Length: 616
Figure (cartoon, rainbow, N blue to C red):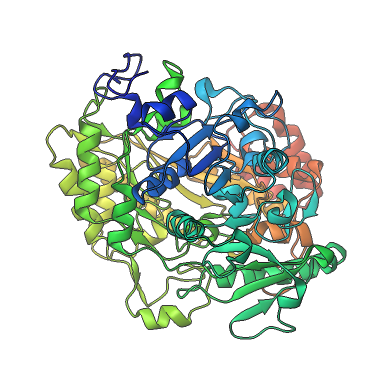
């Protein structure tokens, strides 16, 4: 296709765009740009959507802005003659490998380890377009085909597996994915800065094996380089061989990993011994982006559309975000089961109002835009422009959460900048209404003593249903989860109901709950059922706890102890234990009633039978 050839119109209007508006995915597209070769080839387990919510597109565009020729190979075939891995030949600098926007195993399997039938990041939601552990599979294929070309792993799957970790799907401890895959380097977290810096250093003639000081990178080094003991700047973790024998040592490691990942100044360098294979060295995280830096990342020349190669096929993950705008990165909630801070960091990087409004205007110009922005949000929707008032106190802080066990007194919880964004977006020509589709931290919104934020949110920015995540009702479970008291949720529900009545609205509050989380026993689930029934909820947004790498909850699940105290924590592990908890979500289903009554009598709680099934 010639560079000036217009694209056909399918279900998405491509009529104003050219094929060269996307990064090339084929040799034909590369040549349309006048290139004979590329500097970097990025392999991804996702379809190529040229949008700031898709990591491979962001990295590709950042490298492009830095002057490099970049190609993308989305969802390469790994079971054929490997032509997708060969088609661009040898890049001048390196291959980049990412599993995609989700950990592949979370994408592929349910909490019960059953294979999912769809994949939201694949055209038409088709499953089977990527292997399990694409980071490992793609890297090993590239290593066989191009043994002397640097291979760099990145993305959330690699980021969360940068050190020894429990793998729920194989039910075993696995080593750093750098060791498993054979990649030359792993770039963790949000990767624009470190990927571009790596490209510059390779371009300047440095060998990848000599680049051992790049922030937010993971490299394998000779054991002789590892310090003999921990210092202020280097922390020596329990070796891989010891962690395999002693689960408590794996748990003890995690406390250091989480604390250093959440340090304002980047923390210490982490080391883990892998015997004859060497020592894994994890360099500190970069500071959160300044406003100008994050603006630059979002202001890259994205088309905001899937690549035309997909024609009329629908990509479900794109459909969810096509009319949304992300306001910030990072999350200081520190929930025990969540990986956001491990990947994006605890400190918030917020875009300027001008950058947000520019993207919102782009959305209004989309041919299928009907006047409704689906989400003005982020990892947690209402953390925009928040942070510590005294940054020097933040620099000394080792708390993994700014909200648990209570809201940090140094945290600026002013929602005014966010309310200003809502007002300015709503005032744009063509915008009828903007919604908040991301999850809201109600414990944070309740810090607004004036009540202005909650009223504005509920009255004007709920698309019929507001998602919040109390996760549980019982204090002991919530404490392990690092979540606020359920009493606070009750107060928020009262506000929600009152605002609905004031404005004549009939909106729904949709709470999320988790069963089988570490610290949760069957009786806790029975109490959850009774308390949510009393609030007139029949729960629909529920799930069994799924252990994912690099979370406190997963370490407890694997080791049986809390990483911060090394004290034992009960966890439902066997399938029958998990099923015994899950049934309480659906107490109103008559098929569960006999079993629930029998269980409550066994636990000597007949009083809950009366409360649960009275007048039912």
